[in-house]
Amino acid sequence: MKSLRNYSIPYTGLKLGKHQFEYVVNDAFFDEFEYSLVKKANLNCQVELEKQETMMILNFQITGTIDTNCDRCLAQYPQQVDIHEQAIAKFSDEEIDEDEEIITLTKNDHEINIAGLMYEYINVALPFITVCDNEGNTPYCDKEMLEKLNNLSANTEKDEQIDPRWEALKKIK
Image (cartoon, rainbow, N blue to C red; front, side):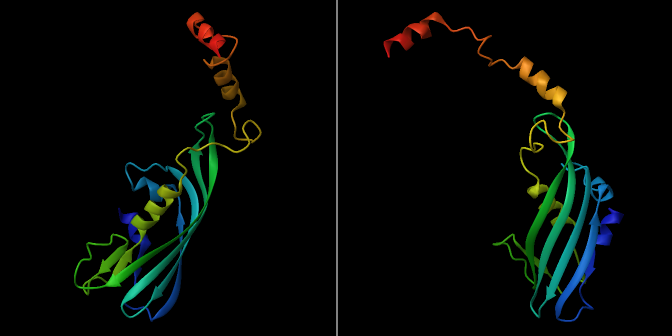
């Protein structure tokens, strides 16, 4: 968890207005999260913090590649991501329970750790089903695996035996 301290922004000394921060998100970042879906990545995160009197607006832009496995051919390939998200942090002495999208900062807080937000945005942006583009044509696609899957496919017409009862029902049409 020590390496996640690098993702804290001390906001008490900042003047009102916009401030830019840049972070590199790589394998060491995801190693800090035990059950992370992402293990290897090469990402660049740019954070624009707009400090106002009663709140801060954090605009995230995360770009780069995440190493994922194709669900079709099982080959590892780099998945391009371009994430644009926004978070709001409000200065208040009371917790705001009704809206989970607003981060509450008390007078005792002096910095905001954005590692959790970045981790969440990256994992949510990852496609649920990951497949390499242009099946069989990319340098990452495992053509041998695709051929084996096609050969083992149970739904080929030549291997399919039609039940004679269904054949009789088709003749009724």
